[in-house]
Amino acid sequence: MLNDIEVFCTIVKQQNLSKAAKDLHVSPSIVTRRLARLEQRLNTRLFERTTRQLTITDSGQRYYDSVHDILLSLKTLEDDIRTSNEQVSGHLKVGLPVSISNRFVSANLHQFLKKYPALHIQIVNGNHLLNLLDNGFSCILHCGPLPNVSYYYKKIATWRKVLCAAPSYLSLFGTPNNLEELQNHNCLDHLDNTERIWNFHIKGNIRSIPINGNISVDSSMDLCQLASSGLGIAYLPTFSVHSELRTGKLIPILQECTNTEFDMFAVYPSKQYLHKKTQVFIDFMAELMAKGNME
Image (cartoon, rainbow, N blue to C red):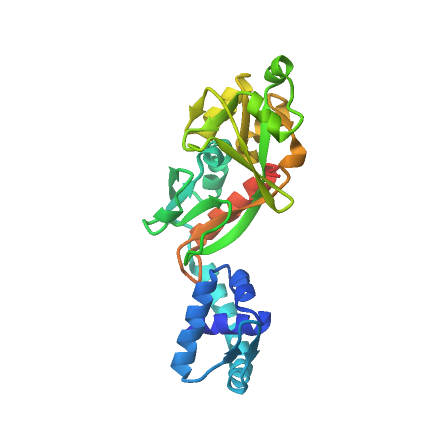
């Protein structure tokens, strides 16, 4: 019931179901379902709803005035007790994109475990793990737009995609002056991109550019290595190539076409409160991403 009351109070605060969902880091469907459940329990309508407006009823206002301060007190007390008593220990199963696991986590996990030595961590690598979240995962790192799923989430970073190539490749074959000229270059691509098209988000529009190339692999890390060795142009997330860009092994090209930012989320099962072990790992990931110059 406490969860439903919190949803109700957040709706009152935001005066909008979608904004309340964003504030609570849940999907709009969860907010709608919990409001309906609370109204059914109270046998009264708390809001009058139209397609454009959400207005609290007299009954809803009386209920809000009664429960708001109580909710704040309960949450404060629960958080204090939970934080003081919960030991950071046990098993933590996390799903991470291969590039992030390789470039960020593996190199820094010793620092995390030094701080929390009682944790046992299982890391599963993959780029499409969201559909596995119910299989015992504590959290999964998801890059890009979230589907409308009934999970909680926390935004931890932003990232871009970047076109890049080695200086040796550009000196031999030249630097493309526009997106259309990519068709004249050897474009290194993901194996699952069967359409052989690269999409670019430019000023709210998507431009689709056909590409050609003689190498396709199923790993961003391999694409980064292939591009660094001078075999062609790659189109990869910044977190896959940040080190090579920083050291000059790869040179960004057509940067005016790759300025769109995407979100990175820590996604976790539908629980109002995170286990402390999950929370500290999410904080650890957010700190790593901030240090990694993701943008």
